[in-house]
Length: 208
Ligand SMILES: [Mg+2]
Image (cartoon, rainbow, N blue to C red; front, side, top):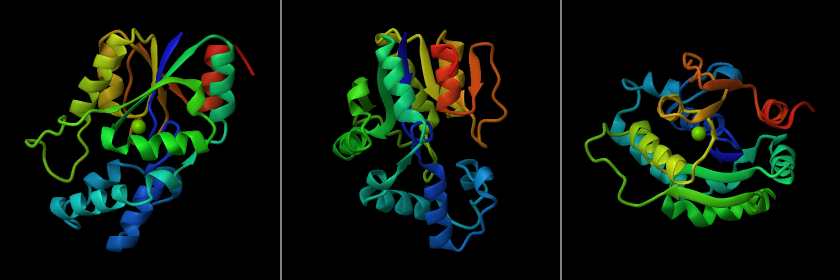
């Protein structure tokens, strides 16, 4: 099977450290770790204005944030077994192309770069100036990932984002949706919710 794999919040534990740093910076209270997620940022309009959120994100991403992220513990083993079984893995992230160096170095350090046929980052020039500032832009990322899924003839995609998962599913790509607090409302015949990498292994490799 040709499998697309998102990075942030599928391989990398991303939302929790991001929100923790955000909360620390602006003195915001966070819920229990299991409920921490990107959806919380939407509720902070009154507390932290969009321009300020932009500033925070750019500063964080320009620093060591991406190179310090942890990965889900069971990810490397499952990826390795998928490749051994003949599956083709493509890492596909909406991180900007200018994060390629930090991203590939980090994937190599985590010992999983070699499992991927290729690493795709979102090219320059995809920035949508009309999109509300300070917000994540899932629509253009969905277009980007669907385009790659079609070009690479992917049969399935590991993803956590609501808009991206729905776009892929509605266009014929099977989605393994990594369960996160911000995607609990999504349901579609082509979307299978998974608890994590062990569950992906069970599904695609047929049991532990
Ligand atoms: Mg993601």
